[in-house]
Length: 301
Image (cartoon, rainbow, N blue to C red; front, side):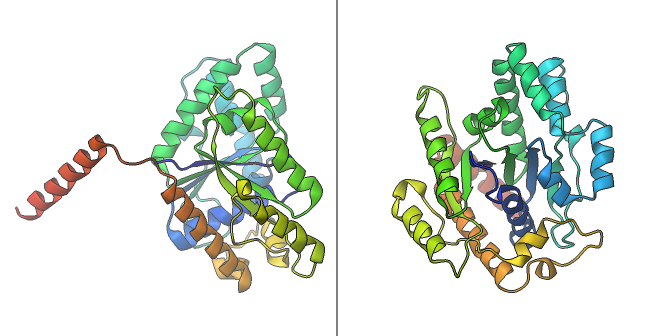
């Protein structure tokens, strides 16, 4: 199943990390999905949203971040298992119990510089490909919180993930980041690239005619594949980024319209992912038929 998603916009400040947080918690709490969040941003924003600062600091000191995993496997040539770097039980939502995290580390930029300096881009790409194949088989959904811009690692995620999801604010500068991403996709057509899952209009001001104008313009461009459900600018989403030391329910964190908006968006996401799966091969049909036969035979004694 194709389920690995790089969440990315070449422009920063579009609410990307907060969107990853809200999607992960909604998918877990309301859809029962097992979600892996990978923090691939040097600022470790999503890690700080999903766990207490002292907990994150301990993980970073223990060298159990995604960057440490990549350093071991790319620069040191080790064959370390990504599971050893996982952190479970994250999120301050008490009914979002199925989210795991590969935390971020501040030395990501130095790692990427060393990869380029030593000419190990191909090694990095192979490690990322293997990693995504394994985690994709272990989770219902894998969300990569990619850094803005196009770094060495971000390009690997974009080329090896199944999909990319592009959040944008409804303004010119943010939408220009989408254009840059499409232009980059058109380069090196012989190389793989994630399929566009769509554009999520984020931080939309309900009272702004300018925001509404840009939103219509984005929807009018069919290549954006905009999600019908936009995310409004609301206090609930701004405060969600601050980790609470006391666990709370989903509806306490995302009350009223905020929670309903997220449920609608995630439902739309799951429908798109389901329709964008490759057609079943004859081998798949035969395996499913055999499994069904074995279940019937077992039930019959």
